[in-house]
Image (cartoon, rainbow, N blue to C red; front, side, top):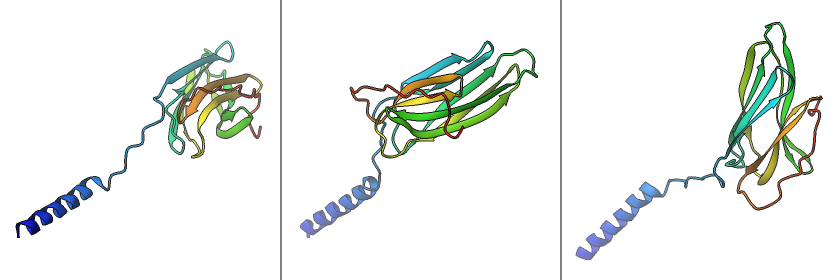
Length: 166
């Protein structure tokens, strides 16, 4: 009788533990900790671009956020800055993913700022070039890591002077 009660107690304890801990998914942490970057780029006498985000800590199949800020420092509100730009993910061979394509007009003395969200495809791993392209004005590239940072060469990234579809 005592053996039966002990076995019943063990079975109940096992069921309770399975219910408490068995249904939980393990937390998935990024392969590398975030490493913030901010790039400030003057495109003209009064036109300033600020591009920021993390260069590491990105997980394939999940979302990451980057910030693009455009500052038209012209004093006259009627002095519009017409901006076309695109954000691209590059590997050494070319464009992997077009993340965003923007056409905005910014009055003098104002700023345009937005958060751009990207979901990296599930099969990505390694270093990529996150490129911000302003057609006929140039390109700014930040190396980012999706997944684990490994001791491999990052780049060279292709130089672009146009956005896809432009």
